[in-house]
Image 1: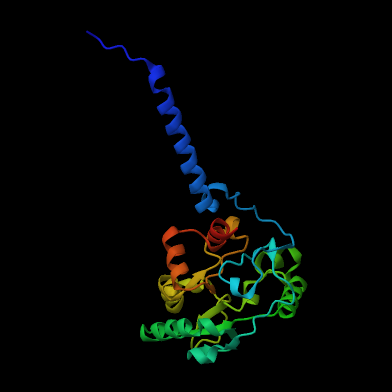
Image 2: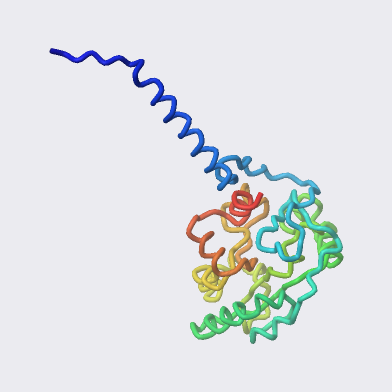
Length: 244
């Protein structure tokens, strides 16, 4: 004898399960709003929109690109010489990254690939002068594709360094791909281990909005750098997904 199932008996249970599923979705969305509701990464354009995270202690999550910027008055108060990290070159960075910068410099030196600092913190006015120089030299279109406009530069955060090879007077952007030099290859393989991430990787201009710069590394701390390294995302993607 075949049992006849009355579907009406199960409608209350089905409704209850649906309600519970909806509740779990809402709770999950509240716990991970970026994962559920994040808008698409903005397409690259040139604009002047104040970024969401302009406080000095929000440096890890501050998104800067061709669209988003920080105020002209932005200048961290705790800048110190990179010399405190026992690395060649000059410039200033935030005091809180000195220990990791020193560890990075020691490890590179021990591996036979010593690094130097070519450029570190740049103020709004310094970036403005650099941009004007590039415009005068190459024109607006080329200049703004390779040099950030004032307020849009990660260097103004005090956590970004242009690295070069120690013992070489050449600029890392002057002769081919610096990532193919011994120091550049070592940095590409190990920079994230010390809290540094490559802001503008090769072949990702449509995502980063800037040309490939193997020398330009931004400090975000070891934990975040390791997490980002594991995702394979560009820094701009990572910041948009996690903090926008």
